[in-house]
Image (cartoon, rainbow, N blue to C red; front, side, top):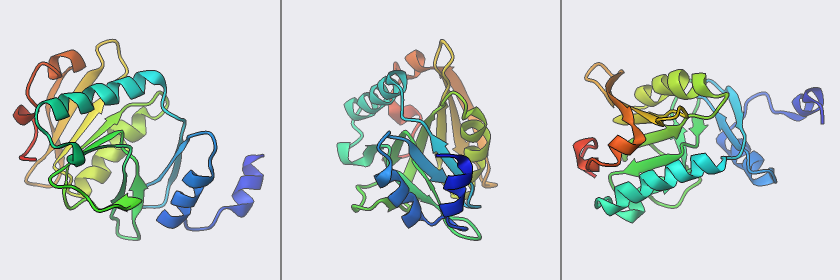
Length: 186
């Protein structure tokens, strides 16, 4: 189907319900996200490297004592904006308490968002989402690069509401530390 044909049937404003319906209808495992401004992103299904990175981080968190029901992979989060809510689906999230069952979770109890940078989405993961997640008040945002070291960049929300980079290290180094060294109380 051509982009023109798809665009003909696309609603003028994509709601989170529309986004959930698009995700349900997709038989190829793509992720659909929108910014709070309504910009649609379509991300290909995760490759095996991305899945292994997310699994290693999740195992590290759980082994160190983060409760299993407070760590989620690919949970939809509602990103508030002035003109409506956006919806993002990070690779990994850590919460201060278990969440109610929902397609799009609010960010109130969200402590950490981890995005494993996708080839082709570097600007969204490393620039756009930095601003969105900071504006939403999420205390920490980490990105994992796809370079040979799998460089993890840790951002912490500062008093002025912007993220400041607090550390950058290879994933292997991070996994040798305690999550408690990096996370607020979970």
